[in-house]
Image (cartoon, rainbow, N blue to C red; front, side, top):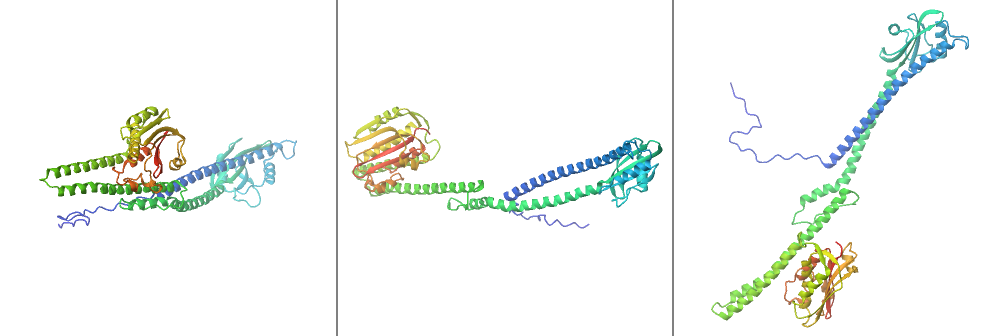
Length: 504
């Protein structure tokens, strides 16, 4: 018996299965899901509304038909009791009663009548009728349902018509015959009208759902377009290129606002990455100089010359100390970007002022004038605030002549115009820690860059320091949701102010 061949999908013996994974099926888009949900909910709502509406209509139709049948019977009984002539008593002859009623009553559009005596047709209306009750089937049904003294309502199918019929037993004085008054209404015809209305409703509902789906698809496409552009942007943006942005025509909905927030996030990331790159470039540049000096002096050092070795050793240690200060300042700036750089607690302003006063006079031989007019407390980091003021004081001493006056003040103050412009919203009151010197000052065109990393005024480039002091001061101020301002005049002096909000 021959063996059957392996199925086409089987892997031949010894062959290596393909390592390429199948491409994942693309999930339905948010746009499609939203529209599908809206259309499904609309379809459910229209279905429930239609079912309730037409159920009520069918119930009302049945009640109306039964009411009309009973009304005909009631009118017939009233006529029988009133008699042929008012005031002379009831009818005494069935034929006279039937004839009088049929002459006065006209059947409705979907209605027909017949009267019977002893199981045989007596009279029926003249003119054109929707259907004829003078047929054997009706006579047989009347004979089955006839109960003396009662009116019986039943459903009956006559030649495809769904009839709602009442059979009322009739008897009059002085006439021994058994009469029957029969009224039937074509309920099926009226129900078909409602079914036709249901068909029209279904077509209108279907058209409404299609129109709603198409309109919603177009509108959702417009509203969700920022999401598509956001998806494409996130697929292409990387650390090498953060310039891509999502095009926003109008931020008039939540999705467009999300795209706008994404663009703002990219702005911050781009600025942060650029800042880090500049930071690394500046750090490399600043570290290159001491390393070059150390290497050059070590290469030129005469190993056998003790004096040359000592001088080279001293120079190398000085450059290493400079590098250590620079690295410490760089680490300080790096920590300023992390949570926990400042530890907030209640700080007594008067105590803070006294601690600063006790420390500034150790910085340099200057006439230190510390004045604390502020009282109360603020929420801040006491050690960081001390560090910032001492850094400002060290800078003031560095760029002012020996013996000159340096003022250190702690005051409460409303925000200045510059602070209000920079800090939005600005606090109503700030603790201002100011340091004023009578030194060389800063030219107006160079004030803007002194807070940059390694930024210095041109006339101060030969002054010892890492160039990161004011950058650290600004980082401490910003961590306290404040800022640093400077007023300076070349040859007169400078005043640096650290603004810390009274209420965070």
